[in-house]
Each structure stands twice: as C-alpha cells, then as structure tokens.
Length: 98
Image 1 (cartoon, helix red, strand yellow):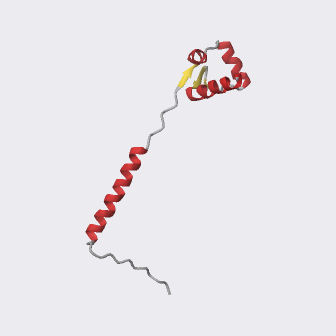
Image 2 (spheres, one colour; image 1 turned 45 degrees about the vertical axis):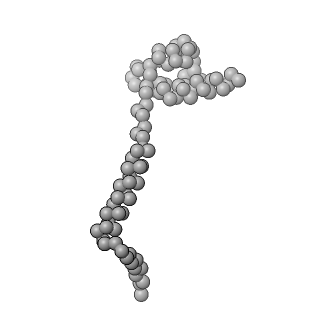
C-alpha cells in the first residue's frame, strides 16, 4: 500500500502560506533577472578594418588566412572577421613573440 506524506503548518493560513511562497519565488526570479545579461551580438568587421586593428597589410591578412591564424567568413565576395576572434588571434600572436 502506498504511504502518503503529510506536512502540517501551524499559525498561518493557506492564503498567507501561498503569498509567502509567491513572494519568495518572485524575489529569487528578480535576483536571477538582474544577474542575467543577454550575449552581445557578434561584431563582424571588414578586411580593411581587420588589417588596421592588427596593424598589418591586406597581403599579410590573406597570408594569415591561408595559414589558419585567422578565420575569415565569406558571403559571396564579401569577407568578414569576427571581432572576438581577431582579439584572440592578437593575444596569441603576442604570446608567441615572447
């Protein structure tokens, strides 16, 4: 036979208990919402902008593409780079110089 668990609460009405639970849940959700940050949309930049950021020529940029140092994204004839990936590549290049 299945046993049923019973919890008894004294000194509070069912409505007060419900209101207390709802307030606690709202407070937790409010705290979670204040800590939540939507991810920033990825910034795509042109070859010229990438070359300026990295302080290299377009030819060097193309060479780094072939060597796999950078990862270009193509849409037809357009070539774009993710800003976050350029920052990582720049850090990697500087670490290799040391």
